[in-house]
Image (tube, rainbow, N blue to C red):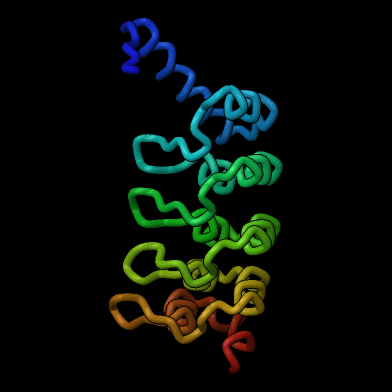
Length: 170
């Protein structure tokens, strides 16, 4: 059966989608959960491909992120730049979010665009605790970007190597 929406219904649905994206950004998990339970797609994305999960993770809203994962959000869904939620958490240095995503099964070696991995993002900004956690979870310390640059080399280039050197066997 084909269903047609009126212009008003289409407009209201677009408004509800924007509300859901704003709930993910702001961490309003209760409202977001009611919307998902009512049929809002759990993998809804904004105009840049950022899913509800990516937005909740990037903005540090662990309860909202856990709820979305519980409703089946794709844990490794990439945005338009190829970045995953784990890549976003590693970039931000949010160890709680990194732990949650790893425990939920996120790919620790997932390509986040150009061969960059979550480990490389964490190393770039000197997030020692995140680097250590990713390595403990099995992240490949020898992996290289498409340009042949490893996480250790990225840390060296950005000046973070002094604080991370021992994690890379130095």
